[in-house]
Length: 95
Image 1 (cartoon, rainbow, N blue to C red):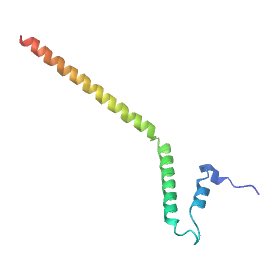
Image 2 (image 1 turned 30 degrees about the vertical axis):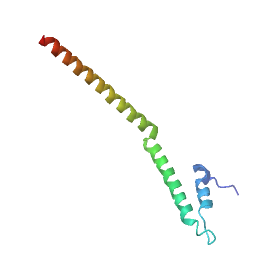
Image 3 (image 1 turned 90 degrees about the vertical axis):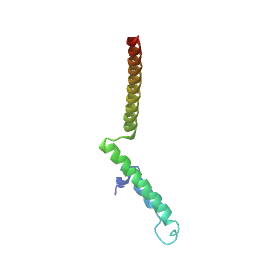
């Protein structure tokens, strides 16, 4: 019979979780910590997949935020230069 390869689609996460989460009475004290870690692992994996599927990649979002900061900074520089020029023209016209 052929070996099933369904677990390998996700990089073996399922099999690793099955090994990490204790089943039985011998590891009951460690169970909450290990299970919590497993839940965190699965949650982060789900968030990663959701982000890639929905098109909201973290790098792209960071780049968009950086571009917005740059545009804002450049607009502030232009505005300051315009104010300075207006003051200079106002002083020159008053003389």
